[in-house]
Image 1: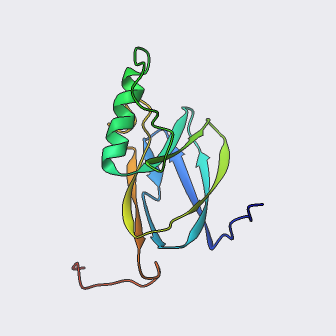
Image 2 (image 1 turned 45 degrees about the vertical axis):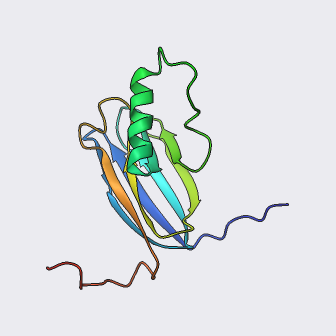
Length: 139
């Protein structure tokens, strides 16, 4: 029997028809489990897809070609991508454990949405997400 994940933090993320995620940058500590409460405040369907830049590009191409695409690989299997579709006015909860330090891209890959700027990042750090390191940038 699998035990339920213990949620370390809950974050609200809004998706809307101005093609934006709010916030568009999530900072997480490696090993942390987040509950994302994802709300679509727009009138169009949106999705939140998390993955590497390469995995997102491959998925975006597949979504554009999906009508005539057969064979190939199943992009939904494995750990390449995580995706959540949210209908207009709907709110969904998504619990994700971030095991290792990495930078993931966040995108809506419904054709035209990513190109209009519907993207962001999830930065998973080795140290706690609430420690802010000033050594790598200037204010």
